[in-house]
Length: 67
Image (cartoon, rainbow, N blue to C red; front, side, top):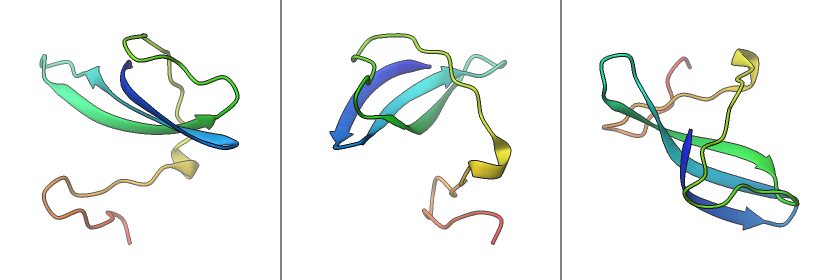
């Protein structure tokens, strides 16, 4: 994930960025992480995802998917 923006909110940080898809397009991603050691803008970080802890939203409407 290439980091575009980091928002530190105390114990947590929200990291906004993107990942390349197989077709060459970019997927926008937001990740919550430890606010004590957040990455910096421009860094590339490796992300592992626990599918039971994810929330997906429709890009057009903002409505949460899977409810």
